[in-house]
Amino acid sequence: MNLSIETLPESQRKQKPEGKSLSFGSLFSDHMFTMEYDKGTGWHDPKIIPYQNFSFDPAAMVFHYGQAIFEGLKAYRGEDNAIYLFRPKDNLARMNVSAARICMPTFDVDEMFEYLQTLLRTEVDWVPNAKGASLYIRPTMIATEAGLGVRPAKKYLFFIILTPVGAYYPEGFNPVKIFVTDKYVRSVPGGVGTAKTAGNYAASIMAAVEAQQQGFTQVLWLDAVHRKYIEEVGTMNIFFVIGDEIITPPLGGSILAGITRDSVIQLLKDWGRKVVERPITIDEVFAAGATGNLREVFGTGTAAVISPVGSLHYKNDDCLVNGGTTGEIAQQLFTALQDIQYGRQPESHGWVVKL
Ligand SMILES: *Cc1c(COP(=O)(O)O)cnc(C)c1O
Image (cartoon, rainbow, N blue to C red; front, side, top):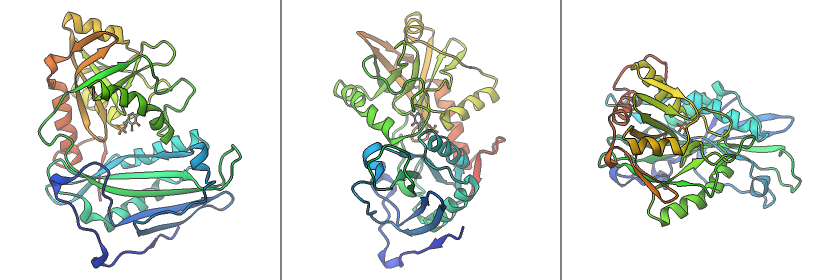
């Protein structure tokens, strides 16, 4: 398809923020990508246009039945001033998995990646160069057909917006306090937990708000059926270091297949560490905490890369992890992944794409 490009004159472009003043997802770059879908025609009219509002019919199906999916990835500016992407096609491929799950149309990953790269070249000055900063990329797809019948929509909009983000840990790692909820669940077997849908996030907000009101940073989710197997933490996958084993819950149908999760498993294997994907209960974690075998707990996701967990609160019990400080493995993984993402270290997995 022919990509049309309409750019703003220099004089109408926004002021770029200082590296330190970047707060997550509040300022967007000058341009965006859009592409439309009509049943019968398929995807058409890929465009790069100035960042602007959309106009939709109030009956647009996304507002009523929630056919909305998204992705999140980052562009990093290396010390050589080149721009690097980390496993970008994996994000686009996962978006197709999400799309298929809620009966939205899929797209050609290679073609979409070309559009994304063109958008990034247009906005290359928006990739910050402050330490730990990056340009966050948010591909999104929504149902735009007007109508209140409950069925897959016949029209969709795909768009990509970009927002510069500062370092997640400007003052070094800060282990988080986690609230283990046995009241709410994120996802159920047979549900949409494996898809990055907007609705999953809407469903998770109340648990997060209640945890924050009680002084915790994030929620740890248990499985919906037994309320004992650990699934994820907040919007991240989770790892436990117990003795010499590194454990993460398996992708059994209610967990999101994180790209950071997969990369961490690969790196740990490369380093000869014993990493296993197996079900793990909250009771096993607390028991390991009581005997001193619980060495580390950390979350993995694009935003934070690695998020060390300092303590867990479950029912009326507290479990301190590694004295509330960041563990060695979390620190090693964070450094290794950042070095790869910013193009500072070569890697053998074909994960990094230079723009
Ligand atoms: C996006 C997301 C993750 C992390 O995935 P990454 O690809 O590592 O960024 C984990 N859990 C949920 C629920 C998510 O939405």
